[in-house]
Length: 330
View 1 (cartoon, helix red, strand yellow):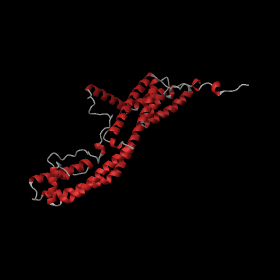
View 2: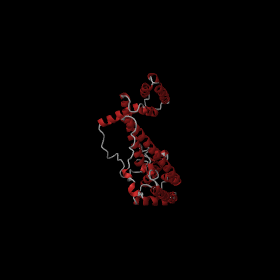
View 3: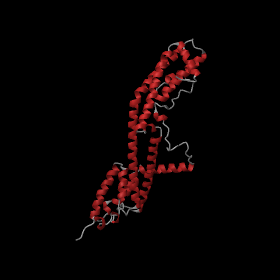
View 4: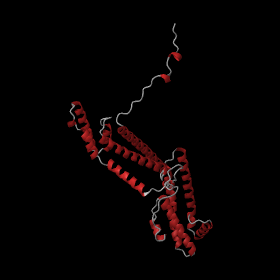
């Protein structure tokens, strides 16, 4: 009697013959081009996801912080009237007048730099000549400007300066890329020469080339460079002429430069001025809570200060307190 023992009678799994993966069709230039196309598409998709994520984070941020920021803006704008009225009173001495002017200016610049408020009229009245220009927004209410690059992020300040030769080389490469990626006429001619059905004696191949020429013509009329490039990469797999191979190699290089540009854009989104919106989950929630606490405390403080500005004696006491603490702003 023959007994079947699967543990000994069957070959081990690692001893079974495995089918080798089929090589991608086409010449090395065609394969490299298709890979470059795929990598560009993958990077574009990742960039779109990153942009969408930051747009949603930005929307949520202003949805939660916006009302508090508006409260602070309203409270700071309310300070201007009593401070400007105090400047007209003979009650205050010259040093106190200078301090009042400084409080008005710092309050205006806080509104301008942190919240993007238009305070040009205040600055025209009180700022020294030549100091009324609009600086960029910077502060916790505007995380796009205040965010710092994370550890490991590219640091432009510590990078070595490029030589003139390097800059010229990069400029020439960029110009070549733009010329290639913006010109469909040469590509169309290249494809038309290789696929014109009138040059084909075999009826079956002539029919295939007729259909292919229709694709090529539609893509050219639509100025669809991407489709033309794909058609070029698929042309006669394994037997592309040297001119087509050279053109494919040039476009592959241009696509690799596009990859570098897309990666740079992604790094700018991750580590640049919008990196505050790249945070997710608990980190983002913690940042939002901190900003909201800060704005809420500021609004409460400004509301307590406002009545003091309306009484000369209380205002003088406040000026002395600020000077003693070394503050030039409210």
